[in-house]
Length: 300
Image 1 (cartoon, rainbow, N blue to C red):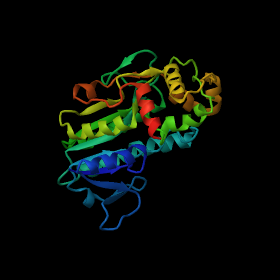
Image 2: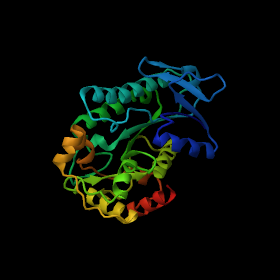
Image 3: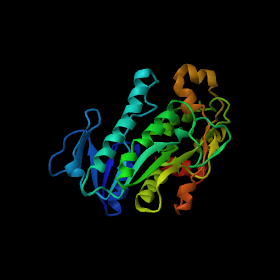
Image 4: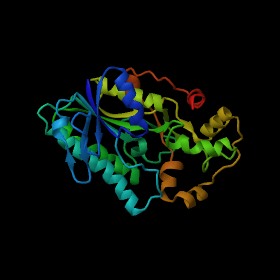
């Protein structure tokens, strides 16, 4: 297939590109710098609403991963606006461009997030569960709705609702490792909040699966079947690193350090299950947390 990928330099995109190439597919990177004619890249600029439709024509699939990092900076009104616009407007631009093609792709796989469910305590959540409340839930709903124009054109649209993607190369685990390796790690808040996670390898494997399986569309939870509490995660990481985990971060301290972001990302509970992925036949390489941590940290 010819597959176009936005966000190709990010944590997930940089792992997905080699997988697609190894499987024999031709990959076009969607980039913000105008490429040379001979490069397998196409230009877009979500801020100005520009996208090279000529180069987008004829692709079999588009995987849209681009968006502002939600955890890079303390949330302010300006940061929250940038997060929302990068996801919603970027998706709308790409979906509009796809809808206007003479030969649109068969499938558009768009990144989304389990943040759509909000803070739901011990509730078991599947793709049919109603959205929650709060900033991230609102962003995710608008993010997914922005692809509707491509769906109306007849393109199969998949919303990959990612959980916490674990990798020592980036994301949450990358940030935790120095603290835990010094023996200064501990539970966050009560430690009872549920964390729905997936290894980086399974995240890109799931994207490839969703791209190829024509029977799957709509929302898909990209998480393992084994969500854990923060306390369980903390203990598992401590065991793998052979370090104590006796330094908790109380909820009030997390809020002082991270503001609103603490409640949405660190203290919120989402017990999410990958019903669509399992029903469509995806087999997880790393379904158990401690095994996944050992495998990825032995390689790092």
